[in-house]
Amino acid sequence: HADGVKSVYRFVTETEGLKVGAEVKKGDVIATVAAATGNEYKDGAHLHFEILKGGESVDPTEYLTLEEK
Image (tube, rainbow, N blue to C red):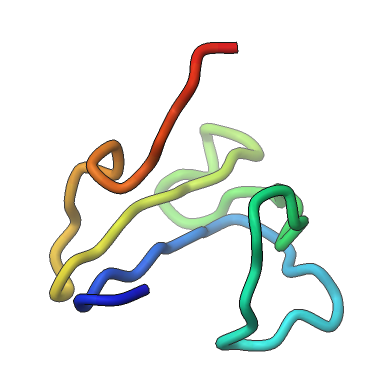
């Protein structure tokens, strides 16, 4: 992303053929949830998602548009 922003996804299996720096759009499958490891393994399979700005974790809702479903 621009301005030193980075999205981080953990505990996933990447979609085959996806390359670093590839452009993705809404609805593209980039990964599937996998088993958690480390200190989060007791939580079971889940997606760990965070936004980093300048290497620091920030509130991701500032960068996402979430609609009620």
